[in-house]
Length: 488
Ligand code: BG6
Image (cartoon, rainbow, N blue to C red; front, side, top):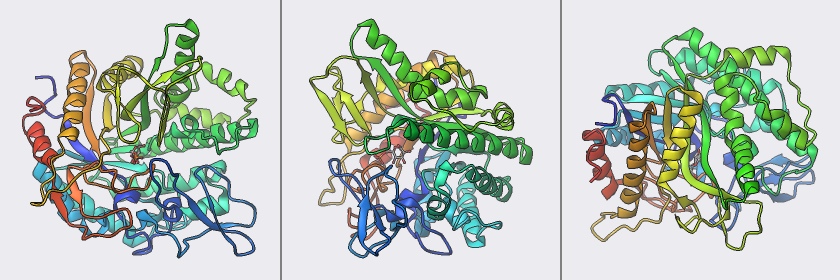
């Protein structure tokens, strides 16, 4: 049997995408609360008011002009405000996860629920108590919580008043938040991830962003502050409870050269370095890699890095490497005739693969490749903490949902993971993304569904929010019950 007996089967979500209750019990806003819905072609918009009171919008990564402020505007709908109402329905949802046999549930703690502005000295008690109840509920069913401390949700106040992660002070605010989590939930939570998809800052450095040397410097600087914040959190987490197992979390895209032109092979290697290894190396090895100098030189990047930071990085290496995996991507120096473009994905089309309705390359072999590559490099436990298929689901007249495409996707990816384990990779867990339908991070849609559990709500927030079991629910339950032996 390939899967270890204590393999952590489960599912994953993020606070801002499921909870809703955006302004309830003292929670402060995050950027997602001023972000509208979008589609595969139309980007989500961030709403704001300029210094003369005029309403306007920005796209992700665009800078807020001088004197303007982010604002919730009446003329827009904000899908994250309601999410799938998990804040109020967590007990019902956890009971469903337990019914599937989950051994772990990956979730995140909303920073602004604990620290509404982000710079307070003391946490919001109601926020702290909310998550305590959630963790206790999970423990009731022997479900091990796996907690992401930061999942794209820096408090809006810190974005507006401190310039977000451009500001070194964010390290201290984050460390206070993380310390609160480790202290309050000691004994309830043991698996932690410091930053979700930390490499996105560099990997998805979008066309709307400032692509001057200053823009690149800012991106690398933000990352550096996050690396230091993560390393400090790891040290504190270990000091508070030596049982804590703390991981990095990387957006894992498997890159392949599009041709056998040596120039493409080299470009592919450099893509791995910039997009994938840069963050993993710092967080797992505790120091910047040799090629970092090359990357910085490309854009004349000069960073604020202190001696103390370097000591922190070295002392705060992670215990496990975790990553999300959705797709592979082709790298080429040649002109591309057939381009794919979807949210979060673009580039040359791989003729050997098929693509999701959102343009994501479906590639289970890429998961095996990634697992083997990463374990070979770091030799620490790894976990696949996101993998899933965003798809349109149809509810039949009798209420059933036959999502065989999702089952097929999981069957192939789990089999690929199994091969990597057979080849020696110490993979300790697998949490599917969006085990319950949720608001898409990329497009803000609800109809881009990932769940085993269907939620009756549409892109405008209309619906009963009632939960129901898709075919994949029963399939995954059997996978867990047989510890991955029967993939049906
Ligand atoms: C990852 C994120 O990028 O992919 C999740 O960690 C996100 O927050 C997931 O939801 C799937 O992306 P999307 O755009 O389909 O929600």
